[in-house]
Length: 223
View 1 (cartoon, rainbow, N blue to C red):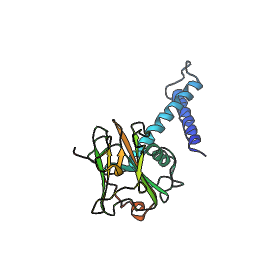
View 2 (tube, rainbow, N blue to C red):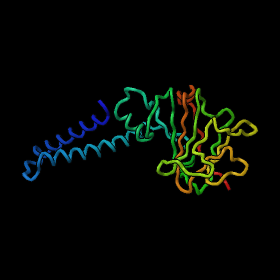
View 3 (tube, rainbow, N blue to C red):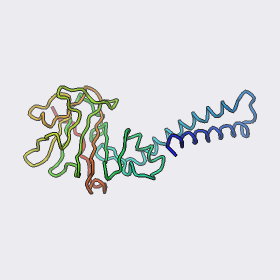
View 4 (tube, rainbow, N blue to C red):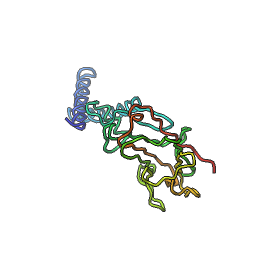
């Protein structure tokens, strides 16, 4: 049975409950019909399901350095609420953790909303890039989670983008609207307003799967 069918059955069940309450608690009301009660029940079921999924997503989510993830997304048999929570935070297809792990943020490490009015940096210490047996990517999206048009047609950076390391082996990614002088190879262009970031790691290493890896915070850079 699909999630949609489950929600339909749940909504109809709420409709039956509303009908029963109307008849046995509030008493017979001639102006009310079964259709009215069922429609109200479906609406109540949808609203209740939405807010329940929102609450469950907050409970299941792990937040570190401003980034949000949920462990166990994509695993069969996790239950309807777990799948709904994952779908709310990570819209679109979800793989099992062994195939991919996902993080998202709309805030910097200090808890302030990301906005193209500011310049940001993401600093990976030496050996601190996400361990994987495939690849990783950091993707930019605007407030509507759409790709951001930019002069170099770059919408993400990854281990295949030719990122230049610092002398000590660390890697800095520059997240800003204007090109960073001398660091364009590590530039992820941002829009002028609010934006969202997504980090995806495919075939992640043991540290990620074990919850030991900490994604670095997004830090506002001083101009």
